[in-house]
Amino acid sequence: MAEMQAPVQRPLSPHLQIYRLSLSMLMSGLHRITGLALCAGMVVLAWWLLAAAAGQNAYGTFEAFETSWIGRLILFGFSWSLLHHLLGGLRYLIWDLGYGMEPAEREWLVRANIIGSILLTVLLWVILWVSGMR
Amino acid sequence: MTMRTPLRRVLGLGSAKTGTEEFWLQRMTAIAAIPLTLAGLVLVISLTGRSYPAVRQILASPLVAVLMILFVLATTVHMKIGVQIVIEDYVYEKTQKFTLLMLNVFFAWAIGLACVFAILKISFGV
Image 1 (spheres, rainbow over the protein chains, first blue to last red):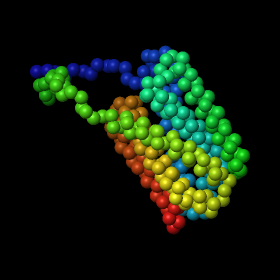
Image 2: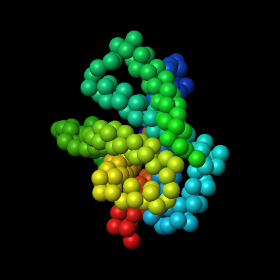
Image 3: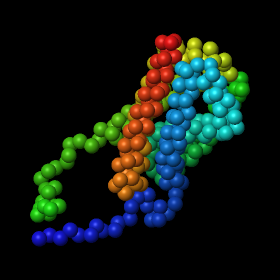
Image 4: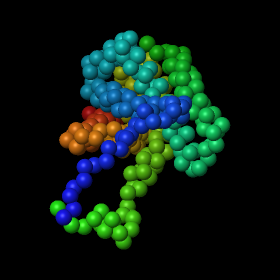
């Protein structure tokens, strides 16, 4: 009769204790973190749409949140997460197609991801400010 | 308890022939979300600084409403799969894992339905 063996204690993901830290690894983690942040952002999006559907008063409440410093901070984080996740997604699509896998190309892509997302977020908020953000 | 060894169980079964649906759906929704997100950003920029009636009027236009609904559908499906993968990767305790997996599905449906309902309500102008 075969006895049930105790499961072998193998290391479990995220394996942070095993690999040497690299930028592409951090960026992989950041892709997941920004993805989770976007979940919270979807709550804000739903609130905005529901408030617009509900009426003037509800929309006023949302506007009060949106123009407060905490609201601005959350929306800034939301917009950066969105743009970072979007660029990161493009990077993964490139890798899925089998391109950009050489060491130099990988480094270039992850750097372009983080620098690009910061620049685009600043650009977006400059555009919002120019178009009369209250 | 089975008398069969794990090797015996898998021999000859071959691949499951399925299992890539979510991998594919995640990439498909990602690709769909790229132009839809850009459209959403253009919308947000165009709504900046506008009064409530103007915002409602723009959101009610058919093109904007359809693009917004597509954005919500693509992103909520993408969100559901993405969060599920994160849970499966990092949560090992069974009760916690299945609770979170279930809450994730509830959350995606709630957000998706709330957004789509709001857009339709604005569009139909009631």
